[in-house]
Image (cartoon, rainbow, N blue to C red):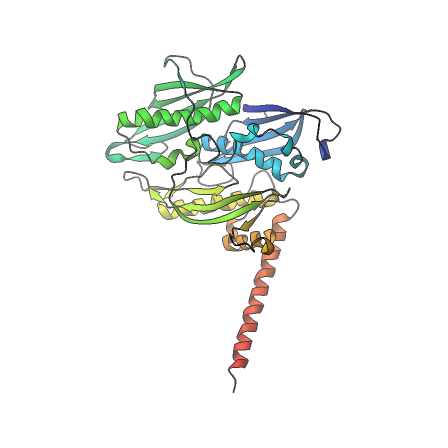
Length: 397
């Protein structure tokens, strides 16, 4: 397979303090590389995208290929970037390195809400400058009477955001971004960062700021703010259902999070297409939306994507606790049991939907959870039966 690496981050961990799998190997050179997003081969709807990434330590692949998913190139790549720190937490041979890595290496890669909320300043680039290598696009449409839609819209003006491969300039990296109205480039700018990851994430925020502060006003466009949540780093979504949880990672680390599905809404105009945001806060940065022909299908697609993403996380060994603010919550903790209960609630949604890369659960971790859920249901049925018998016997004269 030809590697098409578009963004990288590299840093070194000093030898002092290294234990476990990498002990006695001296300083470790870490390289995190991200591939060009491609269509997802095994999910619906067909607009889903995935971005492959690997963690390389001293030229050795320390983490097998992992994937970030999203509804377009930009969201898939941003999701992949956010997933790196999680991989260090959940993989046993990498978890010991995490305390040795300076926090700034992950600060701009973490989940939504941690990235800086103010967009970095962008430097305008002449419109006739030859374009760079476009690695990610986001396409949407605006039209008369407030029409807005994801993707190209018939009878509407199509806007395309283009994010280029970051290139090194002296000791910095520059990521060029542009947007087109139809086929015409109307704005081009660049943002610099310490490496490709910083430049790309900064450019994503900058291009949204440029659109919202200038061009949307000129075009009199009505674009939902939540459409750019993943690029801007600000939560504006109205959630229809949510469950606060605490994610428990294999190394014992914990992080507060949320599983949520937003209110599905029809796109502006008469297209009949609806969108529905979803969130796995604390695990993933991207919050949908998923699309469908009508609000019901859009919400169904959002639930399906939640099930698919949870399937992979549970197979990696991640577990959860239902959030309980009371003081006695710690004494009642049962990550395995709470995860099994969630699987029981979501049912067949938490399944591998024909993954072309092969089984994701080689160690049987998900099978163990399903077995535990069956035991829970059997116990519950027995308790109900016993209560019925007690009530019957208590009612006898």
